[in-house]
Image (cartoon, rainbow, N blue to C red; front, side, top):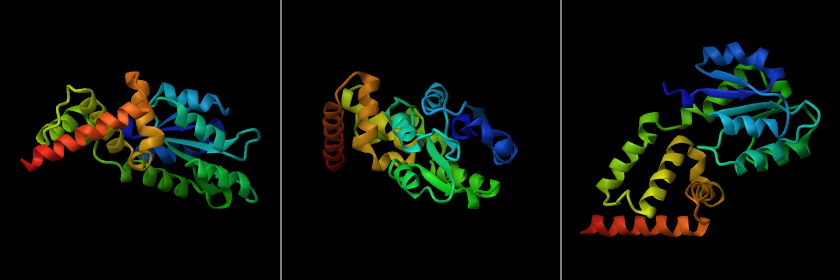
Length: 208
């Protein structure tokens, strides 16, 4: 299995407890110090399919951490899982609005955490080979989309991102277009316009 589909970033206080359960479930673990800025930095340095943090630790603003990770030019947005103590309803709701999956500590057994990580990563993604550039370009050529144009390149990259992270389908404007724009030094609006032009062109070609 491609290693980019089986890596978890975890804070130290959870690492000892979860290392072996995650290992037996097929994941490698990277450990990062507990810090709102250090976690996004670590996620940007290495490919992580999921980030697990313990909101019981004082000083971690989980929703701010999620927004910081989302602002980074990552290959794909990792799944974010946070364990909250009971009674933190306001912080938990803010984290969920930021796209974090939250578990209350009372129910966050090792089995529940591993099951949630699997549901957020491997089980909801297309096979790694489908997300490769060669595979996407081959499918687009069948639709008449030329990969050497700017719109073709943007569309190829967008499909690769969505194939690796199914949540990108619902975050085109907020995540996919800005990420591609940063990667190619373009504006968000230009990325969207050129991608839409290539989709329309492919439909006209298919109808000929």
